[in-house]
Image 1: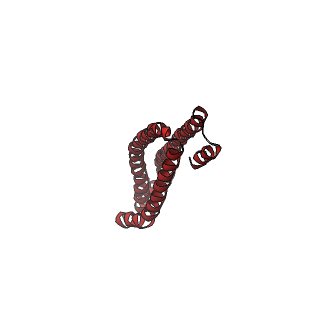
Image 2 (image 1 turned 120 degrees about the vertical axis):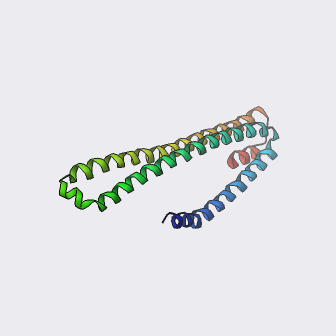
Image 3 (image 1 turned 120 degrees about the horizontal axis):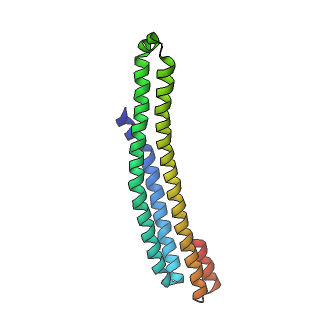
Length: 163
């Protein structure tokens, strides 16, 4: 039943996601406070990086939503084919079309589902890669800023380890 599956996902996955989100939010606030206390000029690159991350997120959410919809359609077609094959097994056997019907059509539907699922996974990996690249850029900006503005060694170490 689709409703019970959705409720089960809400009951199990949502609390964990909320706790993770709260933890990440508090970590980001702490990092921003530390970096700004060490060098308040870093607010400018922080705003640029935050804007870039938000744009990446917006692009990813739209793409991911559509790809998950496509994957669900492909999975549904595959499951419907399995159900129809099982219900019409006597007819398939009587016509002698077991190999063609079961193997070729199921393989085609399974390939379609596998391709769509692969797109979902690859999109998630690409999003993670670009998020890491933006964060590395931010870390490089923070590190380079300490070369431009003379800072104490303790502040430099604190800011770099917190970012």
